[in-house]
Each structure stands twice: as C-alpha cells, then as structure tokens.
Length: 311
Image 1 (cartoon, rainbow, N blue to C red):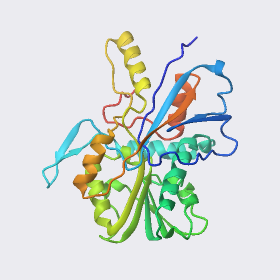
Image 2: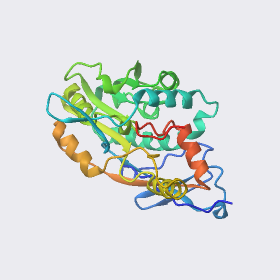
Image 3: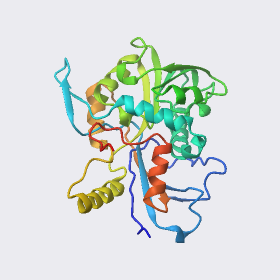
Image 4: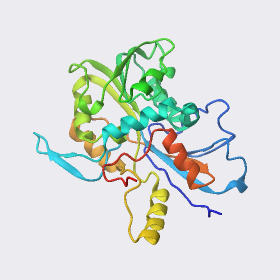
C-alpha cells in the first residue's frame, strides 16, 4: 500500500484569469480558484482516491534552465548543455505513436488555448506567425483569419508534426526542424512568434531568444508559455529522499527549470522590451506517483537531461 505523496508541478504562465478550456469528456470535475485552476483527470473520481497534488505553473513569456554549463559562444556567454535533444525527439516520437496519445493532451490543450487567447487580445492582425515547438497543434485550432494571415508550425518530432492540428481558417505551413539549430526565417520577417510548453527543453535559450528577436519585425510580438520555477518540486524531493534512503545517494530524475526572475533577465538581454511575465498555477490531482509519471511519459515530458540516471 502506498502512502499519499504531494507533488508540485510548477511553471510559468501566460494568461491571468482567462477562460478555462476543458477538453470534452476528459475531466470528471473542475474547481476554479482565484489565480489557479484545478483539473481532475477521469480516473480521479472521489476525494477518497488519494490526495497527491500536482501543480503546474506556466510563464507567459518563457523559462530558461539552470544546470550544467558547456562551451562559450562568440559573445563570451556560456552556452547551456543540459538536455539531450536526440533523446527528447525520440521521447516525443514514442508519445506520438501511442494509441492513446490524445488522453495526455489535457495540460497542453489548456495552456495552448490561453496562449491563443492572449494573441486575440492584441488589437491587430499578424500577417506572418510562427509556432515554435507546436507539438500536436494546441494553438493553431484557436487561430482565425482576423488574427493571423499565415501560420508556420515548427516541431522537433516528425511524428508529432504529422499529427499537428491546423487552423480552420488560416493557411498553415509545417516545418520539421530543431529550434536549437536556428530559425529558417530571414531577419525582420515575422510579425508574431508563439510557443506552447516547449522552450523549457532548449539548451541555448538566450541564443534562441536573440534569434526570435532578430526574426521579428520592429513591432512584432512574442507570446509563449513554458514550465519553470518549482515544477515537480514534490516529486523531485520524494524521489531524492527515497533513493537516498535505499541507495545512500540520489541521481537527477527531474529536469531543471528556470525561475521567472532569470527569464526576465534573459529576455532583456536578447533585446525584448515591454515585457509582461505572469506566473500561475495549475493543480492536478493524481492518486499516486505512478499515474503522474505515466502521464508525463504520455505527454513526452520524460527526463531528457544528460545527467539523468539510465538503467
């Protein structure tokens, strides 16, 4: 018998007090609190099923990483080398080919809707837009012709890109590429760049921010969300305590996340101004640690850090 454990999956957020989008038939009940949203998966039917909580925070701009360092670029800045991008591509491909892949979309669907809602809040039409790390297309279905003229979807995983949903009204072009290798766009060619829960796997986040800034027109807009801060804090602590007790030490099981304070500094250094960084918390209840880890795998959010324990 397993004792209930508290898990906090925290990250940053883009929208504050926005409408809650619930995938039809997926959640058994929902309870909304000021500044937070509680989503209950279908297998969580009663309060007696356990009290393992998972809090997801999102940052409306983005979030960087804090871990091991690597080479220094021409600007004299240290380039982060935390994540194995090939492993992350494999993890996403495996998640995409699963028969029940749609079951695990509930978090990214929710946040993708809010990113699109923030785009709609801007009182202008963006002629050319780019969705970095589009996954299975959680922003595009909410993009309409009065918001965007042409949308490009860019994704590391070919399997996810093939399944990506497109806009019902806007011409959509799919690009299979890794954002770490650069953006296939000329300077001052984009009016809008969006991203939904993908940038937290990027190693050279400052470099990507600079490339986004270069590709955007002078009056362009960058709106993104990513996990950050203390995401999966309880899970991290629980695994460390358990492994320390059993093996006398512990390995890294949770990928590192950035804080919103570091995020603002990175974006300022990249040249962005008029920043708006919002933090919110999504609380999802899981009966035990196993359902949580199964969902993370189904989302393609497995640990891909070079320092992860293998075997």
